[in-house]
Image (cartoon, rainbow, N blue to C red):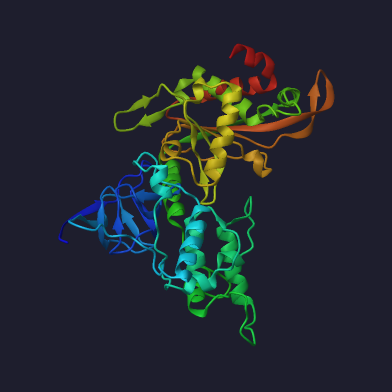
Length: 460
């Protein structure tokens, strides 16, 4: 058997979010492994999510150019792969120890756990579902048979973020021993930190325990992020997501001369309309779907707010499409994925799209396009049980609308004080793009639709 190899170096691509760097979270391959075209080779954390980066080359891995936890700039070497031409038997990739009985159990358990995770791939890069499902991964830092002995015989652990698995691995924690607090039994980053703190504060056992515990060395490594540097304080390094978000938010604050207007809105009629649309088998559109429809209508009347500012050419750029961004609290932090083409959707279609997008964003599965294509953002901070907020504009957008909680308040109607469903709306806009009259006009168009939804929907 003969073979020749030509080394090809894959540079970290622009992942479609305008980022300049990404953090290597977890390598899915090791030096010496054989990979195929479109096979995910590394998990990286960007400004908005953790994504798997697939390889554009096939061959044997020669060099991994960055360690886990290291930042890599876009356009810098990520991995070098030697493209092999084999004259006889094609090499087979196997997990360490997979040939033994214990190894096969460990490999099956590892694949099962990975399938319970995010499954988040780099959308638009060419990765197919079949290719992702069929890959094999090499456990990091594990011997041939050790994982099988350490893994209890239980169902797969639900883990959304690969960062959670990395933290648990570095701390020497078995994910199956950590009590999940996330929705649907998902183990979150906070759960891992709580388990680490619990292990650090727990007294040392007098004898060997059958329950998996945290080893001394890994705990010291993880404790670096939470251990107090001086008495009475502790230092927590920003994640790659937080660093990138910090740059975007700082740019928004430093570049955009923003102004805020707000209004108290009587949402009683909208509340009643939503309740009337419900049936025992169909809950009907939610309040957010109606609000989104009114926002879209307002943006059609005031398109300058559905825009971005080209400071290089002193031009306001107004796109044809309305891609409505929705603020969502995800495992990594706050993101604002967009409902693409929201301007042409009905209320029912917006409701379906919003529910789907929100669920995927919370699980870290929003696409790169959805995370970067927003032209205007709607923020329902009432879900956090607060009334108002002076939000930061999602640069390069020029405005953001927020809605607080809807609660019963005394309200004057026809000279009488009566209880009504009242909410506060706040609107933050770029004063370079429009003046207060335009902002107030848009704000009132949405508020009037909320207060008279039936007539507003007829006009839409």
